Length: 165
Image (cartoon, rainbow, N blue to C red; front, side, top):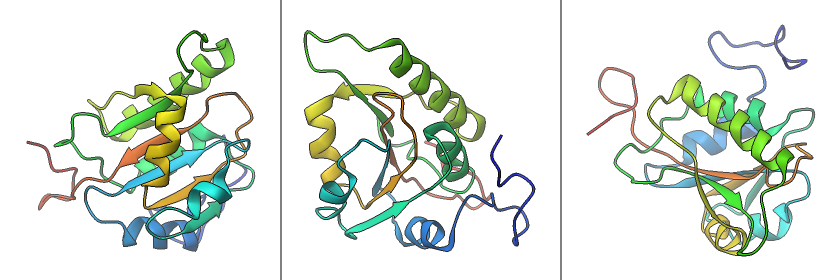
């Protein structure tokens, strides 16, 4: 539960979603990706290389909470084989238990709004390169290791739901 659960000025919009976050999400087109990262991620450097050059710092919220809020309004790309990626350790390094836990919670957040999408791991340095090609970066206050994901925006269909093949 977030401190924002009982706050908000808009109906049906998660109160965690600030005006800056909503602007970024609305500005993205289908196929654009969003990096949602932890507080230790080099967010400023990475954001400076994204399409929008936009970094939004989301204070007071962890990765699963921000992921849940984002997925409540942003469709994921069901036409993309891997519309949801998470950072994994490089070869020879094991995922620490806290990393496994945070990715599991992020998966639950995605499944809540975008059933059928599974987070796929990509190696840490490949993740950095893919994040630099994102549209923008949302930096959370997540402190658990490997709390970093990239989501690819899909299309809202005529029925108001995520368009699926």
